Length: 208
Image (cartoon, rainbow, N blue to C red; front, side, top):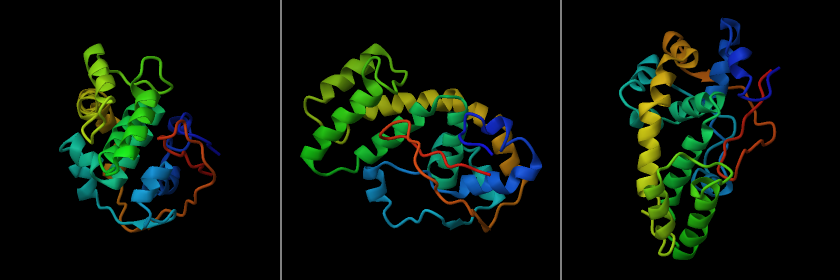
C-alpha cells in the first residue's frame, strides 16, 4: 500500500499494473478546506469523471488551461506534492477562493490567515516571493480587498509556469495519462480520512 504522495512515484505510479489506481486517484476531486468545500458543496466525494486524451493533451497548451481543468489541477497538485512544493498550488488555490468572498469582515479574517500561512517570512507553508511583493502584500492587509493577493498570486503562477509546469509535462504521471485511454472510468476511491498539511492543503487519499 502507499499512504501519501511522498512515496507515490516509487510505488503507485511505478508500473502499468497500477494504472487503474493512478487514474482513480486523479479522477477524485482534491479535498478542500471548509471554505472551499462551501463553494464546491454540490460535488460528491466519489464521482465518475469523463476525460478524453484530447482533453489531457490540451494541458500542454498552457498552465492556465491545466489549472482550469479539475482533473488537471488534481494531477498537477499530485506532481507538486511528489516534489515537496505543494505550497505553491495551495496558495494559488487559496487566493482563487479568496477572490470570491463578498463579506468585508470575512475578507479581513481570511486575508490574515492566508498571509500568516503562506506569505509571512518563515510562515508554515511559505511561498517563494521577493521582498517587495511580500511587503506590498502585507500593506494590502491594512485595507483588504479581493485583489489583496493578486500580485503575489501572479508571481507564484509565473514561478510554477516557468519551473514545475515544464517538469510536469515531462513526468511519468503526465506521459502515462497522455498514452492511456481514460474516458468514463469510475474512480472507485473513497476518501479515507484527512491529512491536510495546512488549512488550505489538499487531502492525500490512500491507495491500495
